[in-house]
Amino acid sequence: MPPALQEAFRKKQMKGGAGIARRSVIMKTKRLFDTDAYIKEFEAQVLSCEAQGKRFALVLNQTAFFPEGGGQAADRGTLGGEQVLDVREKEGVIYHYTAKALSGTVKGVLDWATRFERMQNHSGEHVVSGIIHRHTGADNISFSLSESETTLAFNVPLEEALLRQVEREANAAVFADKKITAFYPDPESLSEYAYRSKLELTENVRLVEIEHIDLCACCAPHCASTGQIGLIKIIGSEAYKGGTKLWIVCGKRALEHYDMLLGQAKRISHLLCAKLDTLDAAVQTLHQNKEKAEYALVSLRRQAIAAAIEAVEPTAGDYTTVCDFKGDDLRLFAEGLKERVGGIITVLEGDDASGYRYVITAREKDIAPLVKEANAALCGRGGGRDNMARGSFRATREQVNAHFIHLEKREERREKNEGRDTRTRIKENRITNPIECECLARNST
Ligand SMILES: [Zn+2]
Image (cartoon, rainbow, N blue to C red; front, side, top):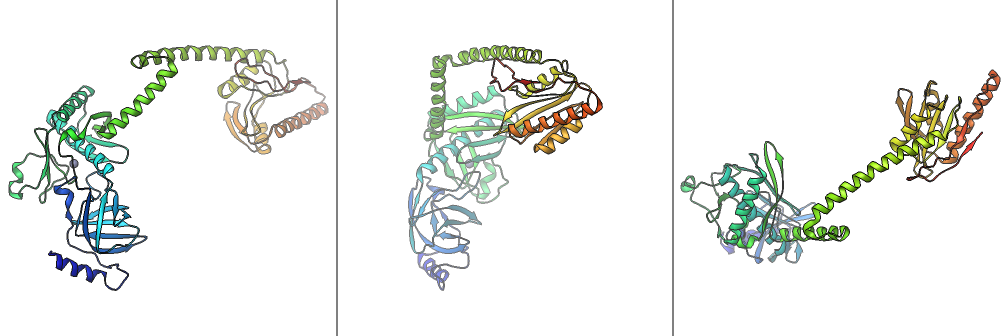
C-alpha cells in the first residue's frame, strides 16, 4: 500500500473516537526482523489503535518487534515511549499491546539485551538440533525459549555420550563462526531443499541456514553468525515421550549459568576447606561421616528410649507422660512401655504453640473410648489400628494435663466404688534423652 493510501486508511480508522479505531486492519505488517535481525530502533505509522479491555492493540505499517511464535516469547521494548506489553500475530498482522492509545508516527525501541539473548539461545538451538539430526535423523518435536530456560525435545532417546559429542561439535561450529542466513525460497523449488521443520508448511516458508550445519524452517530472528551465539552448553536431559528433552544455555545465559555454578562451588569450597577440583571427594567424605553420625545417633536414641522405659515404675494402671521423643521414637517409647504398664499408655510431645502429638496404646485394655474422648476434649485428630492410635491435640499443656488428671480422678473413684485400687499412676514423667531432650516434669503418685 502506498504511503498516501496508508495515511488515508489510517485517518479513516481513527475518525470519531479519541484516535481509537473500532475495526481491525487487514494489511499484513512489514516484518523488519525478517531481513535484518539487528534493527534496534525504527519508525512506523500507526495504522490502527483499538481498545481491548485495559489495553490498546496497535497495528503498524512495519515493525521490528518479533511477535510470540515458534516457541519464542514476544519482544519487549517501547513504542512512542509506551511500554510494549505484548506482541501477537494473526494472519500476517502484528498487534502491539500498550497501556495508552498511540497515533501518527511512532518510534519503536527494542529491549535489545533481551532480544539478543533470545537470538543467541534460538540460534544455539538450531545448531544443536541440526547436529543431532545429522547424527541420528531425530526430529525436534518441541522448543521453548522462556525468560529462564531453553528446552528442546527429540523423538528418539539420546545417550549421554552422544550429547557430549553433540556439545563439542556445536561449540566447534561456534569457534568456526559459521554464517547464519534466512531466506524465502520459491515455492516451486522448496522441495529441492532438505530442511527440518516441525510443521508441514507449503507457502511463505522461511528457511534459516547455518553453513554446513543446519537448514530449518523458522520465523524468528537469529544471530548473523555462530560466533555471536557464544558458548553452547547442554545442562540437562531427561526421557520425554519416548525420546529426549534437553535443557541448553547459550551465550550470556551460559556465562550467567557458569557464574552461578562457580559461586556455589566457591562457597562449598570455603565451607569444606577443600580446593575447587577436589570438591566431589570432600563431599563424599562428608556424606560418609554424616551416615556414620546418623547411625550413631539412632543407636543413642534407642538407648535413651530404653533408659526412659526402664525408669518407669511398673504399674497395672494407666500411664500418661509428656516427653521429648519425636516421630517414630515416640511410638517406640509407647510400644516399649507395654512391658511395664498394664493400663492405657498415653505419651505426648510438643508445646503450646504447635500443639501436642500423641501415641496412645495398651497391652490389653481397649483404647478406643479414651482416644475418642481425648480427641473431643482437646480438639484432637488421629486414630489407628491394632490398639495403637497416633494423632495430635490442638490444646495447651495445661488443658492436656487437666484432661488426663480429670480422667485419672474419675478412674480412681470408679475403682474405689468397685473396691479395686491399682494405685500406681504417673501423671507426668521426666525423661532424660541425652541427645536432644529437654526434660519436662516428673511426678508420680
Ligand atoms: Zn527456529
